[in-house]
Image 1: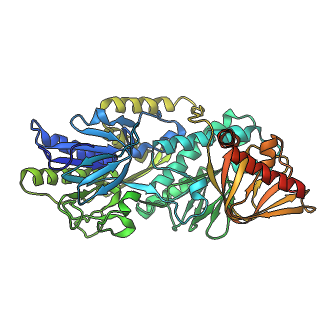
Image 2 (image 1 turned 90 degrees about the horizontal axis):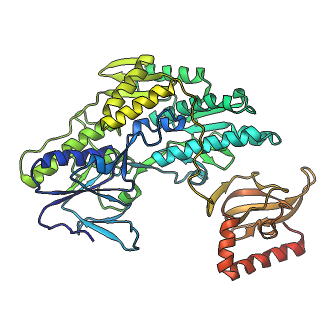
Image 3 (image 1 turned 45 degrees about the vertical axis):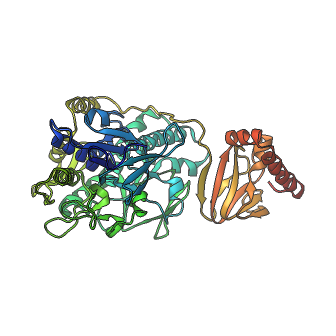
Length: 540
């Protein structure tokens, strides 16, 4: 356990390594100057800072995978960096508990001042199938997974000639959310898939479908209407299908289901909504406002506290006009400066400041050398806005080394084709949860028997025979196992399993089942008894 509050020097602990957290630490380091009268500790689950506005460009590969990340230890020279997940905060004892490291023991850090800058996370609660099948887009790992998934879909589609439905699913890409993040993801994804289609002889670009689903009447609600309408026209011109006033309701592994009842067949669903503050904040007895965000004072203190501060996306910070500050990087960095100043004033004494930043404008990339921007009341669109977008964000990147890398990548991207390397970052998928809707097949007769399934909820039916002449062999409910015959015998499936009522299952690949069965003989014997009972009755 690290030294706690009450040590020789006051300790400021910052939770979160996004714009708000990192810029708070930078401002505190600057305030330290030649003195050493307080400590700074920053806790973040990654050891790097991500320049979030450029994250969608990882999908297309227009910048390198690590060009937009900066190691925290290169940025923060006087702060102690803890690369851990935050598990709990004890406000009375003034102690933060983080996840264990190599030793399975809790790690505790005491504090005198606590800065909560944990940001938002993608929240799929209440949306059936999205936790299992939607790809979130919040961090670098998400961006890499989306890129790898899209390339894999192309590799599979290029050789799939027998199953037309599967081919359409593989070449349909759905993005949910029409804010800045969703629009930029859809634009980059559309540019990427159209550019790489030429490298796949078996794929006609006319088969590719990119769909953007948004619940409001127009995309980019944060921008002025003329700019948002320009963005809509441009995306449609480039082939992006806009489904406005539609809301994503649920998903399976083969389709996105909209609230209006439409089903979009797809194997790629990227969701940038909904989002909510970090789950750990829910457990804290602190005042919360709209969307679960922490209620902060104009001085950035959490309302009703003396030593807890909130900045960034997880904070509800009032602005001079009475509204809440929007969750943007430019607001987060200004909040960080005010928060750091006031923490130093609390430690050393002196006057405090209030947050009164009104914003300089908004910008959003539309891909293919186009963007929309509103800066200091002036509106730009097209190439000029794109040039402004890249110039502003390039100069905001921390460190000249990163700026040179990104500028070089952008320059080479103008003349070189997109990279198609698919990075396989792991082996087996392990135990996964899947969601199915009525009528959807879990597997078909004749498929490879490579997984075991356990029904968590819902109902399935086991059928055999050609369509129209099917015989129902069994119905399966919660707690029942299926798929064991083909798995144990290492043969093809001899029946089809189809969902009857919305169903959640656990899927165990053959490798994991073999490893468990080798050490738990009772598991294999239990599954074999189920198989023998079904063999006698003629089930799958």
